[in-house]
Image 1 (cartoon, rainbow, N blue to C red):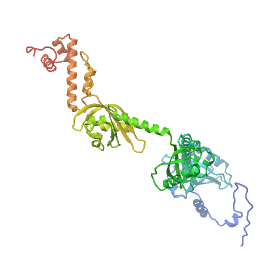
Image 2: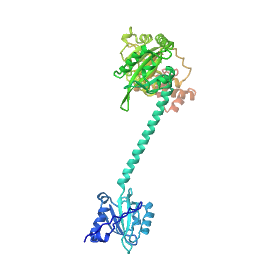
Image 3: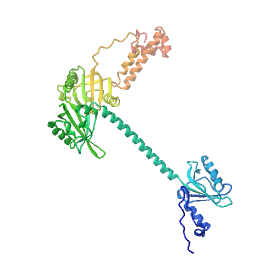
Length: 485
């Protein structure tokens, strides 16, 4: 028998399209075929009776079958889900018509190990007048993981976008507030891309510095060839020497420098203009005066690279190191002259790298002929710039007049003298000196407490009289005769 298929009318929004003649087209389906179709179509299918008890189930998804759910057969469905899903289950069981379908609801099914609940999306289908319901479920964990990755990717993109905006704002502020004239030129067209306010003020003609204007138009005709050659050289060479040019408006002489950089697959030239004025000569004279002052400084001054190789020094350093010529100092390691071996110089360098400066560090200085002087060192690290370096000032302290020690016992002075021995003698000798110092101070205190009664002092110290007399003699305390020993 031929069955004519009639196309259904267009469904309203959110409506389902159902079979038009299920009795004719699906009438031959038996129960086994319906069960197989349900198992294939759903990740999990539950058959629930009128009391809400699961009387049968089928799991069609292999991944879900491997996961251990709480026991389902013979249990009330509402007892196998999380607390946040119980109201959903009750509503689905209540609202599903005997011969109709419910709506999709997201349910958290409890795992057997008590771990993270398994997210399943269920739809209920009424299975007849006896109140049975078939719940068809789909595993939503892969979808949830994909949504989570999508959310994380979106958040990461937003964070990157915010960082880029913050960086652009900072560099825009620096570009606009810089007192140096900076111009960005497209290397392919030799036309302006961007010009900061300082450059517009220096050039003095705003139309010639608008984006798209020719770069060489801001210079006099005699200077345009030099400016163009500098731009061309910057595109091919890493180091380009600045050139002097004259501006078209006002005729001011400027020093022009350029450097190449790439951005977004395009090449640009960063151009800087600096007026050549008397101020430059004053700055040069100021640098020369500073060099002259450092050369005549009575304290030793030396500049090294990061490996402590000497780059420059003043005459006081040569005198302290007992070197006849500057060439004898250049290239030598400062560690050859400064600090106790293996102690001070490493400590100074570590402090410089961490904090940038060192002030009044007490150490020793060894000359070329191993003559030793006590010195104080102050140092600074200059990391920024073309060549990072360290600067050291070295002042001798060994010939300073020391204060006379105060009369009587002076514990802080004695402790200071002991700590000054660190790096000069071994720890064993320092401990022995400390023990002798403490022993002497205790004996002196006991004698003072007992009014110089040595028998009582020996009792206070827990010593025999003979032992006390021996220690008095060793420390040179009191006037001991041979009869007392």
